[in-house]
Length: 423
Image (cartoon, rainbow, N blue to C red; front, side, top):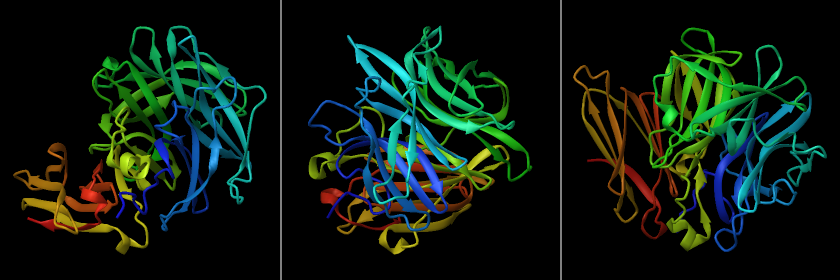
C-alpha cells in the first residue's frame, strides 16, 4: 500500500513543486522540477530535481539533482525557469534567490548543459558572467522571477518574467535577445481587450509565452499563461491573442487551465502544432499531506498533457501510458442524461465524486469534482469524459478536452483504487 503514483512524477524524498526546464529530445522527456530534498527537516533551500520518461511509457527514472543553491547569487534557492535547445546547445534559465538582511535579492541566470542524455543526466555549468539580469527595472519589486524563453516570429528570442510592481499589481515583463546570451529590457506586456480583473492580483508568476496554430482557423496565435496571486487565493490560466511588440490584442480572455483542487505553476513547450504541458499538483503553503507523514515526500506533477488550440481555446488530451491496466482509467460520453460517478478503493471507500448536469439543449452542461466535501466545477461541452486515478493523483478531462481537473486524493491507508462506478 502506498500513496505514490506509478505514472505521475513525485520526488524520491522531500518536497516537489513547479515543473521547470521541460526538454523533449525525440520521445524522451526531461523534466526538471523545484526540489527540497531534506524538507521538512531543514530550512528551505530549493534546487532543481531531474527525471526522465518516454512519451507513451510514463514511468520516470530519477537522475541526480541538476541544480543546488550554492552560488553567491542563489544561496537561498534556484527558483523556477525554463530550457532552450538551439543549434545543438542546451541552456537552462532560472531565477536566483538570495536573502540579505531579510531582503530578497533577485537575479536571472544561465546554465550551460552538456550530455543531458548521459548516464548521470548531464553536466551543469553556471555562466561565469551570471547574473545575466541583475535586480529588476525601476517601478518593480524583488518579486521578479520565473523566466520562460521562446522564439519570436522574426527569429529573435523573448524572455517573459513574472513581476510585481511597486503599487502591488502584477505584470509580465519582456526581455529580448538575438543570441540567447545578452538580454535587454523591453518593457511590460500591455493588454487590449482583457476583461478579467487580473490587476487586483499583486503578482503574476510562472508566465509562459508560446505561439500555436489554431486547428479550426489555421491562424497562428500567441498564448500567454500566467498565475495571478491574490491575497486570499492563487489562480492559473491563459489568454489568447496577437502579440505585436509589447501590445497584446486579446481574443480569448483569462481562462482557467485546470478546474481541479490542486493545479499550479504549469510549464509549456512547443509540441507538434500546439504544446506539451505539465503542471504542479499542489498549491503554495499546502504541504501537510498524508504522503509527507507516511512516506516522506509531498506533491506530484500531472501527467504530460497535449494542448491544442481550437477556436482560440485550449483543449487538453492526457498523455496516458501504454500500461493503462496499472492505473484506473474510465471513459464515457457526456450527453443529455445526468451522470454521477464515484471513485472507490479496494475496500469500497469513496475518494471523489464526478457529476454531470446537462443544460436544456444538452450540448453543454456543468461537470463537477467533489473531494473531501470541496466542489470544483466547470461549464463545458458534451463529449468524451476521461477519468484517471493513479495513487494520490486524480485527473479528468471533459467535453473532449475543453475542461481539465487535477486533484490530489488520498485513499485510507494508501489503499489501491478499484474503479470509477456509476451511482
